[in-house]
Image (cartoon, rainbow, N blue to C red):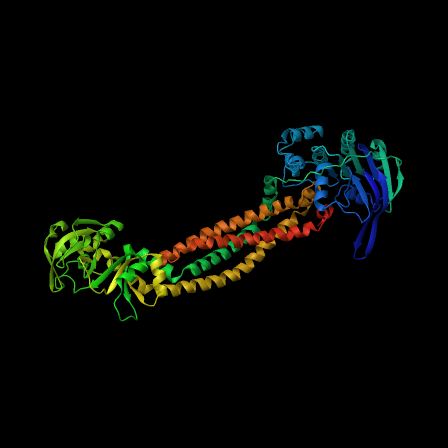
Length: 632
């Protein structure tokens, strides 16, 4: 190592302080070099500059492996500390979130070495801590902590070990043991020790350099010339995600009450946001369609509006699809004077339509008998055949009415076939023995009103009064945007009223989401920022050992990801539950599109978490490693 013109000036509010002033020296590849001096002499500053923990003034030169680390980029200095340097600090600077073996193995993990179990065990054995791997840092004595720090420094086989007052916090016997360890490892690497203990320096040092007022006043081997070295390669550090996650999630145990309060308020805010977005996504078309589906209204009748001419059946088929379109002409109904013995039997067909073999096949209808071919013939549905057989003809078997003459209005028709339209009448069996109206009777009417299940089919029609169509989203969207058509259906008549209710829910949810969201966002960001501040020392230790910006970001990201993930999952679950509860209250799947709000929730939560990562990271990026470690 060659040091030339090395200077360091601290710019404080009170003025400039010259910590080092034009220091020059050359250091060997191995051996123990002690740097002595009184407090304020610049010895710790020198150590921080040589190790890349701090940055020197312009014009300074610290050449290691053919590179001037003063002019290296921040990433290259991270690589220098990662591949060339080991650190032993007076205050140990172990990471409390990790156990002993994880602290020691951290140096190897940053170099991308995941299979480090044996190396860690050997390092612990070397410092006489074999079997201590699973101990927590808080369970160790001061001397044991310092030996763990030495194990961490040497496990990656660095070129240089930097020790800053390694015995300052230890008793004399433990200090002696630490010095012997450092002396032993200096046989095949350079060990630079900053100390105030001249006795230790004279006993264990191969070279003693003394500073005063930022200058070298004594150098035991000042004439030494460093050997020319090949261009060194600094390894890019890689912090494992597992270690980052363990460090990132440790804050949850430190501030559980604040975490719970933050999560509750955040979940409340994002749930309200989810409900508001879900409400805004429910267009009239969506509400109408879901209302029809919920009521079992498989078909609706479309009639002309503000149009004097009858509905064009060909044009309707072009709009709604031939297979979904049934042109209808209204009649006087069947035997209108016949009394119905029950609500169930009161649903008698009163409209004509045309059925074809192709349309029956597309809709998977089954024909018993044949389709009508003459003007005095007709087919009826299996559902209607059951009622007509019992009410009109007194027959218990629907098939028995094929061939019978049925009077419709003032004209007689021969029944030539029965079409099974696959209507499920079982849910309405309770109406077969009552004449009282109620919720089931209303649903019964909605389900059958203007449906294909309650039509009579003839061979041809004249001008149509309306068109029976199968309900689809495309149909409701078209009807909403076209003034020429209206839908006749009891469910549709309530859709406008419910749409207004949904709008009010969306508006109030949005207002509350905005209010709670501001507080939740500030609280969430404050929690993340505060937890990162609490761990500045741990992050500084990571940085000192070579972790780069990406590694530090992983720690931030893991914590933010866990909190954001919890908020998103809980908010999503409660949003879905809230929407389903409102569906149950309304009796209609108004909130059927709530799942579209979940990606927006994810983006909102992720954005806040990302901001919570970036803000503290920007501050740390502007700081040197030693500034991060020493920050209160």
